[in-house]
Image (tube, rainbow, N blue to C red; front, top):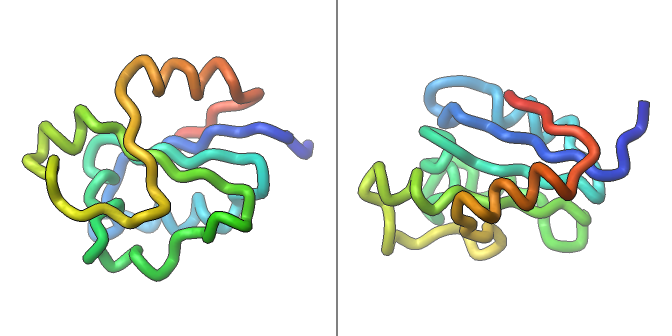
Length: 104
Protein backbone atom coordinates (compact mmCIF):
# COMPACT_ATOMS: atom_id res chain seq x y z
CA UNK A 1 0.00 0.00 0.00
CA UNK A 2 1.33 3.45 -0.90
CA UNK A 3 0.74 5.90 1.95
CA UNK A 4 0.92 9.55 0.95
CA UNK A 5 1.65 10.79 4.45
CA UNK A 6 3.55 8.66 6.91
CA UNK A 7 5.39 9.49 10.11
CA UNK A 8 8.42 7.34 10.91
CA UNK A 9 9.59 7.51 14.53
CA UNK A 10 13.09 6.30 15.36
CA UNK A 11 14.30 5.84 18.94
CA UNK A 12 17.77 4.26 18.63
CA UNK A 13 20.99 6.07 17.78
CA UNK A 14 22.91 4.89 14.71
CA UNK A 15 25.61 3.56 17.04
CA UNK A 16 23.04 1.30 18.79
CA UNK A 17 21.14 -0.01 15.81
CA UNK A 18 20.66 0.18 12.05
CA UNK A 19 16.99 1.17 12.48
CA UNK A 20 17.55 4.74 11.28
CA UNK A 21 19.33 3.66 8.11
CA UNK A 22 16.59 1.10 7.41
CA UNK A 23 13.92 3.72 8.03
CA UNK A 24 15.53 6.12 5.54
CA UNK A 25 15.53 3.41 2.85
CA UNK A 26 11.73 3.17 3.13
CA UNK A 27 10.99 6.87 3.52
CA UNK A 28 9.38 8.56 0.51
CA UNK A 29 8.36 12.06 -0.53
CA UNK A 30 5.56 13.30 1.72
CA UNK A 31 6.82 11.30 4.69
CA UNK A 32 8.26 12.69 7.92
CA UNK A 33 10.92 11.23 10.21
CA UNK A 34 10.94 12.04 13.93
CA UNK A 35 14.02 11.35 16.02
CA UNK A 36 13.16 10.55 19.64
CA UNK A 37 14.98 9.12 22.68
CA UNK A 38 18.59 8.17 21.76
CA UNK A 39 18.01 8.73 18.04
CA UNK A 40 18.36 12.48 18.74
CA UNK A 41 22.15 11.99 18.69
CA UNK A 42 21.86 11.48 14.92
CA UNK A 43 20.60 15.07 14.56
CA UNK A 44 23.93 16.52 15.65
CA UNK A 45 25.80 18.27 12.87
CA UNK A 46 28.94 16.23 13.59
CA UNK A 47 27.15 12.86 13.72
CA UNK A 48 27.99 10.06 11.33
CA UNK A 49 24.53 10.60 9.79
CA UNK A 50 25.29 14.19 8.74
CA UNK A 51 25.91 13.26 5.10
CA UNK A 52 23.05 10.77 4.87
CA UNK A 53 20.00 12.96 5.54
CA UNK A 54 17.58 13.50 2.67
CA UNK A 55 17.90 16.96 1.18
CA UNK A 56 15.00 19.41 1.15
CA UNK A 57 14.14 18.62 -2.48
CA UNK A 58 13.33 15.00 -1.51
CA UNK A 59 9.99 15.99 0.04
CA UNK A 60 10.99 14.26 3.30
CA UNK A 61 11.00 16.31 6.50
CA UNK A 62 13.13 15.31 9.46
CA UNK A 63 12.30 16.41 13.01
CA UNK A 64 13.98 15.97 16.38
CA UNK A 65 12.14 16.06 19.70
CA UNK A 66 13.51 19.01 21.69
CA UNK A 67 12.72 17.56 25.16
CA UNK A 68 14.79 14.48 24.27
CA UNK A 69 17.68 16.73 23.20
CA UNK A 70 17.39 18.52 26.56
CA UNK A 71 17.27 15.24 28.52
CA UNK A 72 20.60 14.26 26.96
CA UNK A 73 22.29 17.64 27.48
CA UNK A 74 22.31 18.40 23.75
CA UNK A 75 20.42 21.71 23.67
CA UNK A 76 22.58 24.41 22.17
CA UNK A 77 24.66 21.93 20.16
CA UNK A 78 24.83 22.39 16.40
CA UNK A 79 22.21 20.30 14.63
CA UNK A 80 22.08 19.35 10.97
CA UNK A 81 20.59 22.42 9.25
CA UNK A 82 17.76 20.48 7.58
CA UNK A 83 16.44 18.98 10.84
CA UNK A 84 13.65 20.84 12.61
CA UNK A 85 13.14 20.82 16.37
CA UNK A 86 9.65 20.17 17.74
CA UNK A 87 8.08 19.89 21.19
CA UNK A 88 5.46 17.44 22.49
CA UNK A 89 2.49 19.35 21.00
CA UNK A 90 4.36 19.26 17.67
CA UNK A 91 4.78 15.49 18.05
CA UNK A 92 1.03 15.12 18.59
CA UNK A 93 0.38 17.32 15.55
CA UNK A 94 2.62 15.10 13.40
CA UNK A 95 0.75 11.99 14.55
CA UNK A 96 -2.63 13.50 13.71
CA UNK A 97 -1.50 14.89 10.33
CA UNK A 98 -0.16 11.60 9.01
CA UNK A 99 -2.11 8.59 7.75
CA UNK A 100 0.20 6.05 9.39
CA UNK A 101 2.83 6.09 12.15
CA UNK A 102 5.64 3.56 11.77
CA UNK A 103 7.92 3.03 14.76
CA UNK A 104 11.42 1.77 14.13
